[in-house]
Structures are given as structure tokens and as C-alpha cells.
Image (cartoon, rainbow, N blue to C red; front, side, top):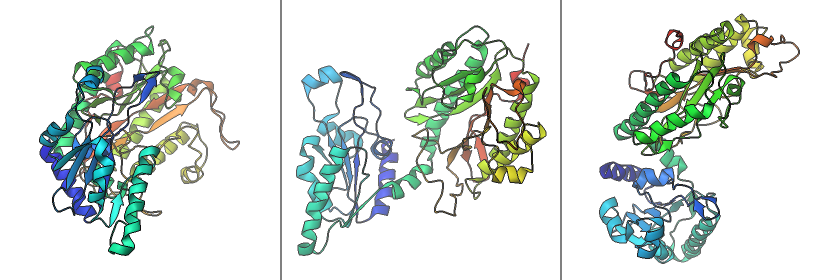
Length: 437
């Protein structure tokens, strides 16, 4: 992996040229009192270094005559390590992480100026840690004060997002193999959930078995809070209480994925708890599945990102009219967003080191990002008919038999040079695969 991290840094340094990039590790997060959450490294920092400790800073200075990649890390401290765990320390960090120079984090203010001196700008993301922001701004102000005398210096502070995040958007083979592993574990968990879910058991029991499997297979745990939503709970998009008892005619919506080496799966399936769709559940499920497959077909290199959402909305709105749940011309209903009480979210997002991964969706006001080989995107249309759904006056009243049904189907899709690959296809979603008994 070190060769890959080195390649990533080089790619970024080629872009920032005379700039200096400063990347700060994630802070420790307090759960309660003096108990910390499990540490999770900042994704940009991890992407460039693979270094997985807090209180660290990475500096990329391509213009520096000696040291282009510099790390500041926590020094070895036997007493602290007894309490909070092993630290790599200064010497090993140089050896194991390929840094040209490594210092103790306590020496940051002393050594940072030499890596800013030859830069024309500083690449640093403000807004995550106000105290650290202040330190960087002070260094920048010192540099600016010298510009009149020296005729050169970092006169601009720029967010590295513009140069780094397009790079993160294209997944390497190494990244894809980690994503596939996260997906393989998640697939096993979803297939297990379908076997164990039955009337009488609780949502949290299904959640517990899935998350047990995530860890058992070497994952870090859930990529995000697992949603196990039965019956009308499925109409709450981010339902995470997972406390209800499954009833005989419920649908169960499970949106859960494993995190493996920081790469994340994101899969949603909806199925009948008793193995039999009611006519209304079946009609809506078929509609969502048709919309999802039509949207996935839009994942092609060169296609604009919004093609998946536009196609899903078109299929869903047409279907809602056919079922008598909406009334009017499909094009007008879409234009006036009359479908939104049933479908209120977008159809997908980038996926990778972050579940909602970095990268822009629009390049400017008018132009959408186009799909490129190496992009990974989720495709996840849904329909949600809440018990208290309200439509506009020009629309029909929603009959009781449709109320309380929530359905979402989500796959993770890789853009290839010739089209796409559905990475999550081993999790069944066809009606005949979900109907049993």
C-alpha cells in the first residue's frame, strides 16, 4: 500500500506545484465524560498517508529542496501508551510511512515556516478545528508580512478540496479491492438478515446479527448507523431506533453496510417479513425496482450525473399515475415536483472512503459532473407512503391500503470503460427471490 500512498501524494504535488499542502488528522471525539469514541482518521489525511493516529499533521511541499513529504506525529511516551495504546513515534513513522522528514507534533510551529517559505499559496481546509485554524492563519500572516521585502510568498490560502477531491473520486484498483471486500461482507450480512427476519423478532435482533458479522469477517463495524425499519418505520428515511417488533404483513427495509479498512459498502433491500408481498406492496416494489434498474442503466461513462435521478423520477412518477396515486401529465407533475411527498430524496451519491464520498456533483451552475471510469455511485430510488401522507388539493386522496408502505432499493455501481458493474448484485432483489413459502 505504501507505493499507492506515495503515488497519491505525487499526483497531488504535481497539481499544487509551488503550493504547500497542510493536512490535519482527525481529533479524538469524546463519547461521554472521559470516554472516547473509537478513533476514525480524517479521510483526506488517511488517503494521503495511511497514518492512523490522532494529533498528527502531514505537510506536502513539492518545492522544498530536501523534504517534500513531512509528518508531525505524537512522540513515543511509555506512560501515555500504557493508558491509550501504542504510538508509532517519530523514528518508525519515517521508516514505515515513507516520510522524508518526521518531527514531534510539539515542534510544528518551529519547523512549519521552512515548508511555507518557498510556496506561492497554502492549501489548507478551514473550519474543522478552530484552534488549529488559528495557528495556520498566524503562520500565513507571518509569511504575508515578509512578501514586500522578499518579493515572494504564499499570498493565497486555498481549500485543497478542489485539487484533491477529483483525485479521490477516481478509485484505484487497490481501493476497489477494499470496496469489494466491504461489499462481500455486507452481502453476506444482508442475506443472513433475510433468513432470520420473521414475525415476532425485533428490528434490533436483525441489526445485531448483521453487525456481528461485519466484525466477525474483519470489518471495522457498520459504515453508518444501520437502518432496520419494519412497517411504517420504513417511511422515516434515517430511522435508527430499530426497536419495533416485526409484524406478519410488514415489509422490512434494511439500509446497512460494512466498513472495511475505511472503505464502505452502502446497500438497501426491502422484503416481506412473512415471505409474501401484499398486492399493494408488490405493485410499489415492482415500480421502485423498475425505476432503479432504469437509473442504473444511465450509469455510463460520459453520461451526466443527474441522469440517474431524472430517469428514476420519470419512471416513479409515471408509475404513480398508473396506480392512481397521482393525477395529471407526467411532465407537469415532474416539473411541479408533485411526486415529492412519495419520493423526497436524491437517487444516489458517491461512495468510497466516506459513505457520502467527496467530489462535486455539479461543475458549475449549468453543468453536471460526467461519469468517468473509476467513479463509484449508489443508485437508490424509493417510495414512501407515510401513514399521514398529504398531497396537494388537485391530487387524489391516498387510500388507506397504500399507507405505511416504505420501499428503497440501493446498489453500489462502478463506472467502467464500457458501461458499469453492479458491485452489490449478489444481494437478491427480484420479486421471485424474495417471495417464499
